[in-house]
Image 1 (spheres, rainbow, N blue to C red):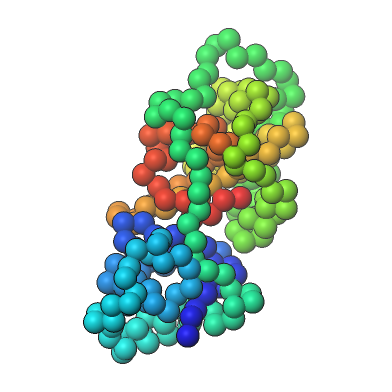
Image 2 (cartoon, rainbow, N blue to C red):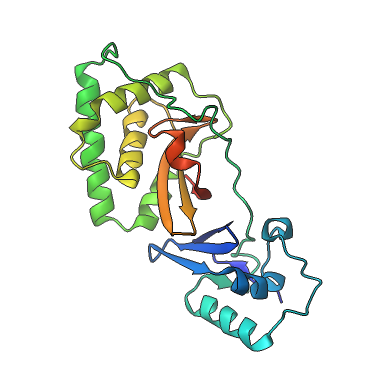
Length: 235
């Protein structure tokens, strides 16, 4: 029997670890390489991604496999339902065009009063969402206007990223990646631009990060900060 990721779960593999993000709980679950090796023959997905020879059954321990599957089912991470469930697949995002800072700011960046007003409103609204609205509803709301990460960023979007970077001190919180990225998203929406938000994870040591990107341009961060993360979700 094959199992599928539950519809509210996003997953990826990093350094041999299976990392699952449970949106309803706002939690991450990790399976180490040995556990993934046991689970792989039963998990629907790209076997090239898992990189295991599932025809070799010598490693299988039925008791261990059943324990792993039971744990994942109890935590609503996987499902037997191939209609609502989804396979584990890799998420492709373009590599940064350059390893160096791409959105350069300077004292010559021109902005107007409406930019200041809109970054204040974006920051306040993002703060409200992240404090009072479950993350799954925030993600659902942001995803109602899907974008295309492979589309070249417009000159206006790059300009907005420069202005956002210059006006970041007007945000009401310190630079926290999820808050910063959602604030940038709403700031761009004031001007009919729609950046792609990416959530990436690293297995060892575990960490998660969020940033905005369009094609190979990192819009609210620097490439050095994001290149070690494996994408687990795009918004």
